[in-house]
Structures are given as structure tokens and as C-alpha cells.
Image (cartoon, rainbow over all chains, first blue to last red; front, side, top):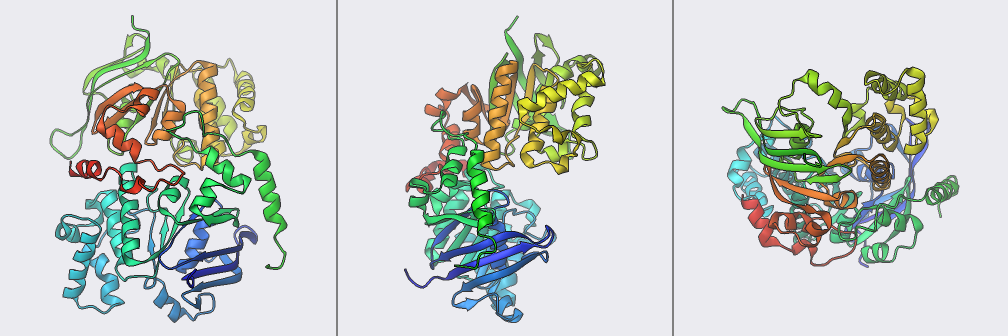
Length: 292
Length: 277
């Protein structure tokens, strides 16, 4: 394996709101350049906390207590704020979940799409505009001139998500964090957006972390998967291994819980309480133990 | 006399808005729901599935067409005459946080409708019914004195299901009731709903954008697009051999949790055609 673009080691975090309750427990994960990693788990698993830590937007109530986040050879936990600002947005970009709240409702797409190009790349207006048009074409928007003039509310959900994907790729980041990017979309639009992200990722050689609760999405577009429960990594490996021959009972239970249109008899098996109880015990047992 | 519990023919709904003439969201829809039958209504956003559900319960006014409930024409029945039917046709909502009063305890949320509809003789009787039902829906009795925000998402949804089922209705409308839940919680809620409809002999209209969920709980399905039913049939037939290309497209768009190298690229032509209109 080539040198990873991202390596997270023993990352732990606590929530001050819940009296110092652990929300990440010695998480390890690695991402190679150009690779797509699925970060999956149910609510409260800690997948969004990891995404936020990678983007430097953790809420004040969440504190990282140990571990390292090494991105492109630099430890993000020890870099000075100015160097961090350079990395966030420039080398690490976000594709957000809700395309409506992520866009400023009062600014035209043209302004929002060229912000980074003008301010970070110092491109003059004309060039930034030309690049933005090019980006819109790359995300298969047929009439980029109209979209550039539009306000977010004038675009459909799928169109808005395309604009945000264009914005994420605008500065040619080395890594993109996609936080449930298709959860708010219809299934047919979801498929188009997944195809688009995968295509751009391959064309640009960008590493992508896909935060999702949908194992189906992971199966179709991720090279590797990390499954979390209560802030701890439960199983990690290639998508083929984890979904094809899952080792952990929780992984198997999650796969069996989802309904399947192709197998009406299968699915809908709730995760057994014994599995959850065992998981909680295992996860709690590792608390307070020094990092391996 | 038809044996269907609910039947609607030529249903049209127009929402009044700024646009002259309003916006027509249902363009003549025929639906029938048999007694004890679970019928899925599936479609993407804007297809009219929620409006159809609301029209069946007379929660929106229909512009044309007729609706019958248990043989009675209710299309233009005045609200006073509708009232006895309200108990018999209940609704479970998508977001229990928004549909359960945040300032009421679960006890009050569940007993009040029983008294209002005179299903229970007095408050002691109402409480007895609620307690009995708790076991059935898998809620601990300790939840009785909690308010909705003190419950987990799965428990809240079960309170919503209990509120509807306690009134001993003939028909339940469930609109996207599991879309916000984790898969393990979703499996529990769906299993509960299946058991209850079977044991209580309920008819149900189950609205969802998720074809896998529809397949798991429904006997028949209506596929909607742009205010029209494009396909209707028994689930096993529709899923194994969809007659309409749009149904095919919807089914192909669902990612299954096993690697399928061709999935992402499949049916580009069909997607392009769907995008064009």
C-alpha cells in the first residue's frame, strides 16, 4: 500500500454535555490516495464526529482526548490554526448532507461557486467564472449559465447537490468528506449523484470518505469499509470482505436487518439484544485501557 | 356492495396557490384497499403519494372523483358526519417528534383519544387498555409518565403506532413512518406493524419512497409518478416483472448491500430518458 493520505490513530473524544461520556474510543483508520472509504454505523456510532474532526468543525462541547490525525504527513492536532485553515477547505473538502442548508439562500450560485477560487486561489473574476462554468459542466449540468445566475431555491435538490459537488472539487482537494450526501435525495437521483461522485473521484484521483448508514451505498461505491458502534471500530476491511464474509456478529446482524426487495423472506431481523449487550460490554471494557 | 373498505375513482386534487388555476397534483387516480389488506403507495418526491393518502382520509379536499369508505360515499360528507368515521380511519405520522404533543405525557397522549372517541368508558378503563397494549408494542410501563423527548426514536414511533391502533380502527394510513429510523429500529417498527395489522385485522395504506420496505410489508402496491398511478399490482408480480419502465427504473436504483460491479453504470439510457422529462 502506498503511503496513506490519511491515518487516524487511537483517536478518542468525550462529550462535555454528557458529563465526559466517550464518543470516540481509540479509532484507527487509514485511507490511501484515490481510495473511497465507507464510514458506517447507526445513529450515535460516532461517524459524524470523525467527519467533523477531519474538517475542523467539532462543536465546542466535544473534546479530543488522545490520538493523532495525520493528513498528508502532517498531524492535524498539533498544527497551528493558520496552517489548519489552509488545509480545511483547500486540501480537505466537504460534500454536505443537506444541499439546501449548505448553500447561502441569498447569494447566487456564481458567487458561492467562485468564492474558493477567488479567495484561496486568487484567480481574477473572469478566470474564476470560466472555471466555475467548467466545473458545472463536469457535474453534468446542461445549462451552466442559467445555474450560475440562479439562487439555491430555484434549483431542484439533485441540482443543488451537483453544485455542491462541483464546489467540493473546485480546489482540487486531496480528500473529500461526503457526509450522507444522498440521504435527502430520491433513489433515482441518488444513483446519478453516486455515479457522479465516483466518476469525479476516479478522474481526479481524490480520496473520499463516505459517511453513510446505508450498506447498499457502501457496497456500490466504496473500496473499503469501517463499521462503528458507540464510537469504536467494530470491523474494518475491504468492502468485499466486510459485506461478503463479515466476521463480527454485529456486522452480520446489521446486514440482516435491512429489508431486501429481491428477497422478501429475508431482512427485517432486528439486531438481537444479546449482540448489542455484548457490544456495549466489549466497548466499555476497552475504556481506560492504555492505547495499544 | 363492493367488498373493498376504501375505494377511490378518478381522484383529482388541485392545490390553490399563487398560480392561476392552482397546481394540480393528482390527475385522476383510482385506488382500492380491501379489508385486512396492506397496500403500498410508492413514488418519488412530488409524485402525489402523500396527497393521495390525505385525500383518502378527507384531510385535503378533492376537486373531482369519488371516495367511498365501507360502502358510504364520503367525497363531500360534511365534517360533522365524517366525525364517527374519524376513529375508524387513523393515521401514523412520519415524525413522531412533530406529531406527539411535547408537553403531554405518554399516558395523556394515549388515553385522551380513547375518551374522546368513547372507546373507553372512563379514564380507568382507558388506562387499563393502554397498559395492556404496552406489552404488545414492546414499550416499558415506565414510559407512561415520560414526555416524547424522553423516549428513544424507536419508542416514540411505537407510541405513534399505539395511539392509532388503540382506537380499534378499520384502516390506518402510515406515511413514511420509518424513513428517519436506523435499520435495526426500522426492522422492529415494521415487524410490529405487520403483527398488529394481522392480529387486529387492519387495512393499511403504507406510503413510502423505499421499495424494499414496501416489498417487506405490503400485499399490493401502487407506483405513482407525477400525480398518476403508473403501475398497480400484487407485490410479487410487480417486483419480479415490472410492466412499467419507470417501476423498473425505481427498482434498479436501489443499491443492495452486496457488490455489484455493474450497478453504477446500468441503465444510463433509462436514466437519461427520465432526466429529460
